[in-house]
Amino acid sequence: MSIKSICLFSGSSNPELAEEIASVLGTRLAQAKVSRFSDGETFFQIKENVRGLPAYVIQSTSSPVNDHLMELLIMVDTLRRASAGAITAVIPYYGYARQDRKVAPRTPITSKLVADLLTEAGVHRVICLDLHAGQIQGYFNIPLDHLYAMPVFLDDYIKQNFDSSAVFIAPDAGGVERTRAYSKRLGASLAIIDKRREEANVSEVMHLIGDVKGKRCIIIDDMIDTAGTLCNAARAVMANGAESVVACATHGVLSGPAVQRIEESPLKEVVVTNSITPNPEAAKSSKITYLSIGKFLGEAIRRIDSNDSVSSLFA
Image (cartoon, rainbow, N blue to C red; front, side, top):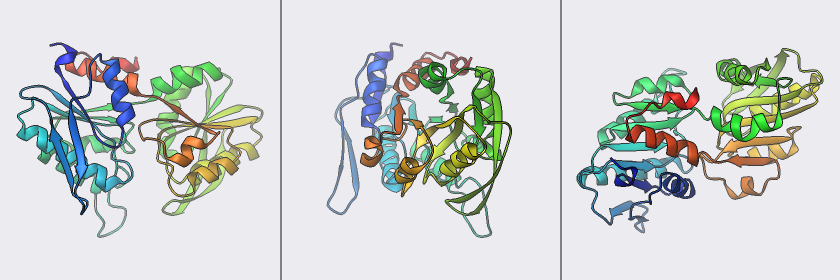
C-alpha cells in the first residue's frame, strides 16, 4: 500500500505540525472542515471519499483541553460513520495524563476515562509521545505506540552542543529512568534533584544528589507546565556550583506564569518540541527554543502503515 493512499486529518491544535507530517510522507492533508456553532458546539465535515482508507487524525489535547478532546472524538466518530478503514489517533500531547491514579479519596482517574472515550468513539490505534505516566498504555485495549522524543533532542540539540563532560539532571525521583537513558546515550554522568511538593503546581527543591560543580548541566523532563519545578531545580543546580544549566522537555505546556519564571530564572535555554503549538508569549521568548517532531512522527506513521518496526526508531 502506498503511503499516499492514507488519509491525514488535522485538528485545530496542531495544524502546522500536521502539514509538516504530510510533507514528510509525500502526501497532503485530507479536505475537511472543523467549525463551531454560535453556542460553541463543534462540527466536523469530511469533503472527500475516505471509504476503506486508513485514517490518521493528528490532534494534541492541549489547552483548551476539553475543546480539543471533544474535537478529536467528533472527528473520529465522523470517520467511523464515513466508513474509513483503521482510524489512528496521533496524540503528540495526551491531556489529562497527570490524572493517572487516585491521589486522594473520591477523585477520578481521568486519563483512563479519556482512553475509554477514544476507544468507544472508534479509534483503532493510538500514537502518543512521552506519556507523563507509562501505565496509561495499559488503559487501552487497542494497540498504542508510545514514542519518545529522545532521538529528536539528541540529534537536533544535545549532541550539537554537549559532550560526555555534561551532567544530566533528573528534576525529581520519577524522572530518573528517563534522564538515565539520555546520559547513557552521551556517556555522561547523572544527578538527581530531591524535592518535596506541598501542593499542586507548587514545589520546593530540597537538595541535589550528585556532582555538578563546574559542569554544564541539562535538566530532562517530560513536560513544563507552570515551570515552578524547573526553575527551582535550575536554581539548586547553579547553587551547587554548575557552570550553566539548560532544560529539555518534550511538552511545553507553559501555562500561567511559566514564561515569566523562565525569563527570570538562571536557565540559559529551554528546549521543547512542537507537540503543543507555541502560545504567543512563549513564541516571543528568547530563552525558549522549539524543535520539530514532524519528521519523527511522519517516519513512525510510515512504519506503522507498512507494518515495519517502530521500536527500531530508538535503536
